[in-house]
Image (cartoon, rainbow, N blue to C red; front, top):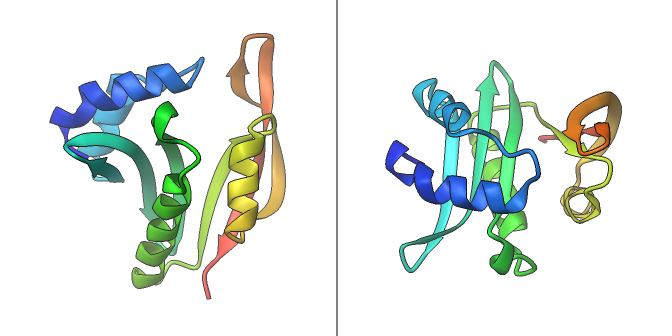
Length: 141
């Protein structure tokens, strides 16, 4: 992902979330050299992710698939690629937070071998106040 991709990324982000990341958050991630990946097909962004590698851990911060491209395994493909990257960089674990109401994402992460290790109360903004997040981890062997 590069700065010039942010207009299209923002269109996907805003279509996908009630409380999307801002363009400034994406820009800061790029400037701070977080790992920001795109899945493109026919010069069109279908999915993206943003991760941070710190010492021996990876934190998946954002993963999103364009609404009309969902259900075709792109989210799984992106996470598997991240797992391989983390393995190559000798990371011990990958961590992420997911809304407790996001059952498709929870199912995806469970299928890929992530385990629930905690709960972050009132982590996400919600239309009715705040929503809890599950803290998930994937141990790299």
